[in-house]
Image (cartoon, rainbow, N blue to C red):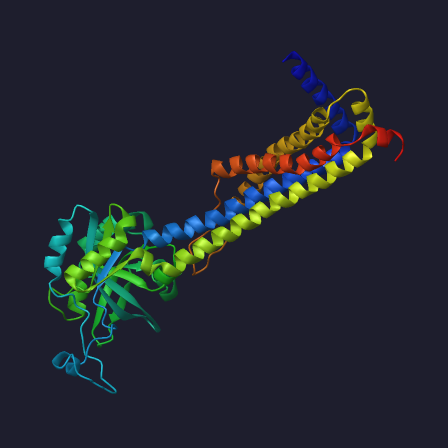
Length: 422
């Protein structure tokens, strides 16, 4: 044991001399690891931060399950219903004039609210409208809601930029408007706007609040009003409901529950995975690209260390031969160069996570204007500890592997051939 400790101590001393005697070479190798890990942390922090930000605002603004009457679905013709087994050919079938109303919505709400798997249920009326303010006219969407139920599902209170949700309850003919829509119409809290439906019904409503979800596709077109007011605008009765939004206690159960609800209620029940399939796929692909590019940086740094240690061994052939002639075993020579690679890797990794943190901090403070697309003032950056630990572990692993091959080569050197000058 004491001999092993003594041998290790001697190997450490020789490795230190090698590192100090060629400071430029050591620093270059260390900087390769430093910038590899630094860029890895900065890049992965930025990309995963952007992905998490878009995922959060997308998921918080969409229900886990959306129940609605999908009037675009293909339906059997009258002939197919009368003669289902026959050969029926129908050309130019005219679409049915169907309403988007959910029949029996009150019964559906009662059933859903008794379900222990469901956290919240919010009925809604959705209609396309024209917003008119002076000479300005914009196409958009108005949603008649029970505002407190809507808040329970989507936390609207935290997204209010002006006014309060309770103002909508207090003022029947009020409207809460998206920030992008209000900006385009040059509206502020307290102003009045004329709403015109596609059927030609109009109503003047007062802006009692302005919200900002953070997604331009929502903030630029959507507004909320009391359900009873939208029913009045559309000249519909109190039972008129077009959509039901659902939040689950466990949203991962959305797909099987949606299938169950669609079978029970007949109406279309769309889960959040289906509704956001394009976004989820894009997010998955971006994560793969991010990790691939990030780890490539570390691998490239590892090859740099390999080349430097290989050149070091080549330059120190005579030193290695003398050490082996003095009684050093191959394993002792290997340990000398492995120690060098691990020291370079450790110092480079520690400096790399510092550089990575500084770069990440500077990026997070850099101003960014999301415009009408997304509500973003600065770049969102992740500072998760696992990325820094991954950087250190991967940096040490890469340098250890990069140092193993040259050190193995050094341990196999025949001292007699070197000393003879062959």
